[in-house]
Image 1 (cartoon, each protein chain N blue to C red):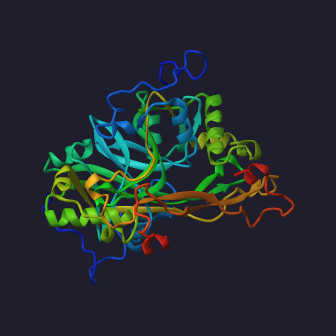
Image 2: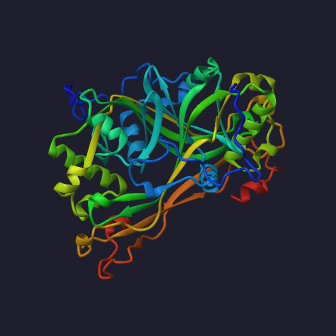
Image 3: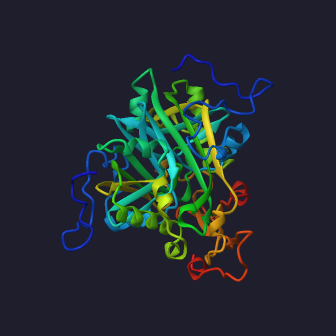
Amino acid sequence: MPDTQPPQTTGPDAAAAYEPTGRTVPTRSRERAAYDREQIHSILDEAYVCHLGFVRDGAPVVLPTLFGRVGERLYVHGSTGSRPLRTAGGSSDGLAVCLTVTHVDGLVLARSAFHHSLNYRSVVVHGIAHAVTDPEERRTALDAIVEQVVPGRSQDSRPADEKELAATAVLRLDLREVSAKVRTGGPNDDPEDLELPHWTGVVPLTRGFAAPVPAADLDPAIAVPDYLKAL
Amino acid sequence: MPDTQPPQTTGPDAAAAYEPTGRTVPTRSRERAAYDREQIHSILDEAYVCHLGFVRDGAPVVLPTLFGRVGERLYVHGSTGSRPLRTAGGSSDGLAVCLTVTHVDGLVLARSAFHHSLNYRSVVVHGIAHAVTDPEERRTALDAIVEQVVPGRSQDSRPADEKELAATAVLRLDLREVSAKVRTGGPNDDPEDLELPHWTGVVPLTRGFAAPVPAADLDPAIAVPDYLKAL
């Protein structure tokens, strides 16, 4: 476990923005970089998966995985037999990771191929993930991961029992070295292209939910809960 | 440039599946792993961004980026000044990368917190990315990246000119060490949980497009093209 204090999450000392570092200042499109804490939390909270990067045998590995946020801490979990969790759990130094979340909001069609783009919101977190051993924090983390799937759900499901807890590794990554990158708005064509005969603009992407599909073995007397209707 | 031949993409010698390797056989949930070439192409082709992982100063970096596919080759592009492209371009050894694409198809709500999951389709590609220097291949790659955003669009936009081509680095990653992971269906609750009073099932996620938003400076005489109406 790290002996550092967790980052300040509330109160007058909580800065409104993360401090940029060498790793979180992009080499290009710097105007799209953002460090606002509230905005970054919001991008993270809207995601169902993150892409977790780590190094194995000198090579990068990027795996999609569930995650949860509690204040300034992110949690991921997995089988105690899974590779990243085994690596981090087996070392008091933890595991160097990069955790990235991306939402694609629109297709940006410029007149020139060169200026085609996407509207998107992404967050990149750099840091060292550490195995969580404290039982209370482990339970909090697992609840947060369920809440990330559906807010309200952790109170309406059976919590992990001792056997399940023993089979589950939990990693914590503190939100310290964090940045967002956001593109919005229309295409940025060059002035000399404005008369070209191509349609130009944005196709917004939408995300929605279809009607919940009950499990085949669900007791028909159990109605769809309000927290699902609210989606 | 690598001196190896590109993988076979068509004809009687093209295997229907990628060969599993130590890196593409998961340590758990092996029943979800898939190597079918057609299925993997389809998962890739449906995505707007990939998450590209590489190692910088010994630490992992994961960035969302556009990409395109041409047969058994993936292409990513970027400014010649961007970090991964500079790293790969500056070395004849190329850049070790892991390129991952994920679609989230549904929220899986089990009766137990432990069995909560997502329905998803992901593809993970391991390999060495090489800078593309051949002018013809560079143009093909850039077209493919535009086609990944909207099929049909590369024929209805101004191709990159010499100045834009000079400012753009293109990396190629061959599809050799590739796997998909797919989860479908309902929750997998344990038999002893079946009588619990919690709603259980799947909430399907949907993706759609809103009406195209023309750029403010678009000539109103230019109609929305058919390839956008087809989305």
